[in-house]
Length: 453
Image (cartoon, rainbow, N blue to C red; front, side, top):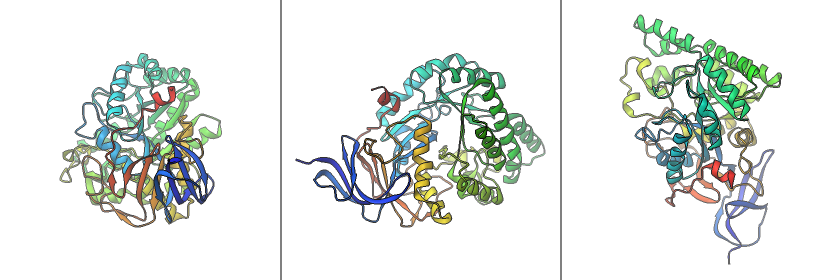
């Protein structure tokens, strides 16, 4: 009789402080032994010689649009895409579904869909929007991992941006519940005014779009949110920060002892405004891709430890909303479809900038697990969930055929990474293998329920 469910042999395991060649034994979805030359047999054995084994990616920022807009992206296609990128846990944002996740009923409805369709584990954000502060407690009690608010326009009528009173009231309630508020930090007064000025003059080019969302808009929103957090004691997580000016203010808040974390996204590190000029709507996002000098500063800030984690902000839409013939950039959907490429992107940066793979694992797995209190995830240790991304350092060019999102449209198409995901295991079960999703049923768990048990 087999002693283990899974044995992965001879892999280069990426730990928090080193990379070591060793074996991994798994039983009942949990890592039970880590040592070279493990004796015994398993139901499944895999030789990972020459491969790097990272802890499964925890992406705290994706937009799947189910229910209501699953034609944009749903749990089935979205979770398979994440698995193809080595992601074993993702957090779905509250705004793109219909209904938006702004009360406990909508949260529980979305959770049931996820449990039926997701191939990897997931958590769900709740929303902070005007006139729904009273729903925060119910969302928290029913499993919201945290809350999300926008300080600029959202692009969706169902999910309004938070005005200052909503933000203060919501922060106060979130603080009392011991939860975290994630913020899209761009100043609506600044961005709305600049966009109106541009459009009234017929200025709708890529350059005009960039100029309508300057770094000062991000920095002002960050500063305001930090001031409100000082008043209310609310823990903050700033999403997709794209400028040094914003990081300076976040770093100052950390130095004061405030409970603040910050992420950026791979597209701000690998791409620049030049890509928007060359590729048009497919490269539009908010905040926008920055000029090359700002992109280089962001990479240095990452190396200097100023970003806590990396998330994809996977934000897909139907092809028509990113049609390359759209002349007015303000009319195109502002989001990058890229959830599959977070780990690949960070490995590329590590190779190009002499960054250790352990730091990559910290940004993509360990830090999000710690920040959002996922005690069995985020690192490869005995007793932890057997969540792995197995990586080969062989070139991998992104095509429509190996991109698993619903819509085969992405800024990353045509990009060649110096690495590829060869397998993904979620709780010891193989979900992606050698370029194919393993059709073994939808067994992803809603993390709130698993944490209660």
